[in-house]
Image (cartoon, rainbow, N blue to C red; front, side, top):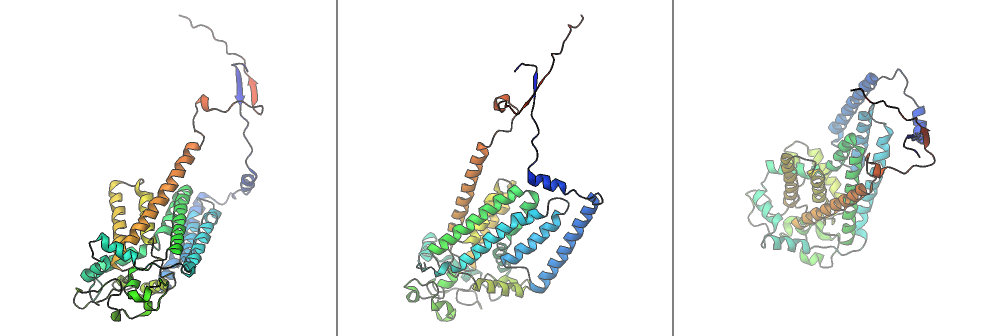
Length: 391
């Protein structure tokens, strides 16, 4: 091939699916202004309907309801900006996977594995010099009525039921690629948690506080002592409450819904109590509340400024405090959740970097250009004659 030959690459035809979509051209009367007006009317209608739902029935607590409302809102926000069917394509698989996880988690305590009752408590005491953290916190911070820190702890605890899905929705509006990165990490973390729940079912502090050691000697997953009046157990395996605030109950209580009374959201507290009663009671290791929070922190860490990182770190620590103070988890459960989050984040980051390195370079360097093929069109160009410039 001579130096004066111009190689022209033929433009490949679009794939059949894209040709079919192009055939469905937008009518001329559907102007950008009309789409913008329709989008904002749809968003307003969704907000009014969602607000009425929250006012009448409370904020959606169950995963299926929350995902449905979020998908409708995202569809409204997509009008004129993105094909609405992409909401279904992206969120339906996520919803099905998480619903399958909910079903599997509900049966993880029926597989016959022995339940852990002592090791978590022993680890916490070893970490804190013989002091049981949950007992110490409730002795010093639990009053007869809810205090401001009870409200903060409750809101922090409840935030986990919304944070992963709101994060997915916001990321989806900004970038479908970022949405997939977050969704993949969260799904894998959830199923990692399920695997550990099934293999090593573990009792939380509030359950250990109701059960004497003799009642759980055979490692049951649902012993009769869970129904005991905590006033009659005298601390159970967790230990006695000996230095409580005046007027406060002298036993360990499950406080995760306590702060709602100060917010006048008694229905929300009742919903949490109902939801907690329908899940696996011995799925404490790892703490998915702590793991999901740390996954959120790690995911946004490099994307955030210094002051935002301080907020992220504070959120993770506050979640740890809420879980331990409210007797939902041991400190060791939280550490296990953090470890799982770091492992999932590191694994995804490793494979994403490998995939990025393996991708063909986006460069105009001739050394990376593809070799000529027979399908190329060769056009011979006559040489351009030049005359020497006059001086």
